[in-house]
Length: 359
Image (cartoon, rainbow, N blue to C red; front, side, top):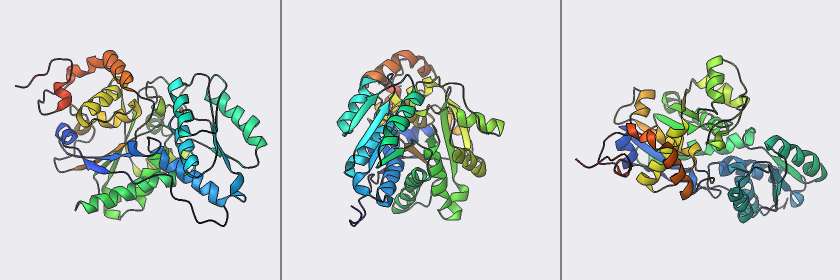
């Protein structure tokens, strides 16, 4: 493979569409960057794909490369999907607690092997490093978020958004909204903004969202130092990093981003209302980005927004969700809709179980 041309990128350019429903709900222009359409179903195809591609073309013997990942979530799925497109094997080691749905998705995506071992991620990762990676000369370790090549991959999202907005006759966005787990996506967004014309990059706010029980970045920014959460207590398990990457913390402080925390109920509400309004199913780690558009949340966080402000929502996607999951969320957290704005022009308002009716 060393003499072959560079393989194609294992990620795609995704659409940027203006949402009439969410714009109506938020009171400004909402643009959806549909990362849920990536080959793996999430934005992680960019970062993980970039890391795999770099590792492959720079390896002294590309023909023996075998990728190893200890994430049973979206990073693992991105690893398998990208490896398959690069014609390389990928083994994923996950804890015994990993849901059968994700095991099935990893196998369907083409994993060379899916191994379940250990009670938590740490035990699974230790097994991968000490029992598998150490004994494979072509083994390449794939972290979920904390790697410069991953950040570079995610930064391509911003350059795409810039060009897609220009194609619509628009110059830059006023706000980019993204959720934060380990901080890989946030790093990519902020690094990508640094490479844009100064007029846009300096005036574009970044709204970084986390759920209660996974707000490691928010607490770190409040305390002025990188903190580690004692545990994760949120349904948005894709945001479940007890400690964000140092780079994410440093960039967040440098760029003076806006950090906010929403509840599990709000993240779940974002999922089912997004399904009703845009016919797109996402998991809570993505639903939190959409949730800020409803019931005045966005303008409470960013009161300077006007009806002409351009807000890009990163629809980061995620594969750990089903229709049954959304139904269960709505049954458990439906009370949050008591505060739903009575706007008969929104499909998700009329579909709410709390009786909103057309006037």
